[in-house]
Length: 212
Image 1 (cartoon, rainbow, N blue to C red):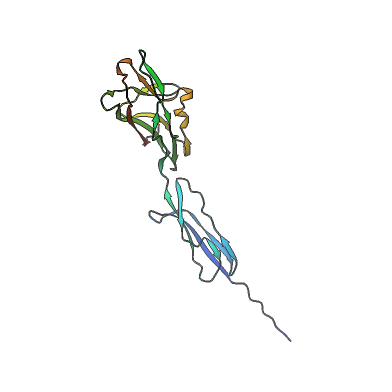
Image 2: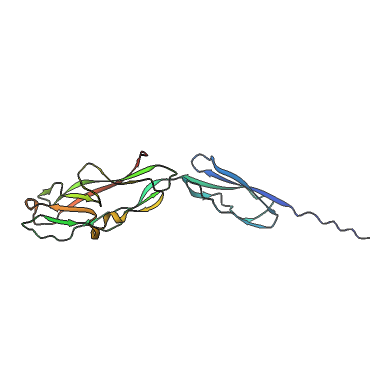
């Protein structure tokens, strides 16, 4: 008489945690991951509103074993920042004239914002941090920001270019489309026109704004 006893396959249960990397607090409900010893597993981070996946515990993929450890996914709080903003703006070559010179600037880069936060408004602001000068003569306040609805003088005081509560990646490059008469315009009166290469500096800022 022969007796054969088949043992029940051993199982291992892992707990998957989703934590704030700054304080180790749980951001979402943990879950159980159970498998037979020797079976493979693979876990991916989940999306959590207002947070961005940062790193993990290094064991998100592997084989169930007696000594397998729990899995931890770590996230950082969402941030508000520029993905891209114009570092250079050119107006080309203009000839001295007996009429005012008007020209829209051509940006070398686009204007893109990323808002990873769960909530909150933001504003893109612009100011002139250095006046136009050829080294001898300074042109005061010849720039303005032109939108479809308004034209605002650009000075050393920040102006709001646009405001929104959109989340994710937002492309605002269309606000600087010279072909549509939008963006940064130079309006140089006759009395300011001089020979030489004029240079100045603009400063872009992205600020948190109170909800309406």
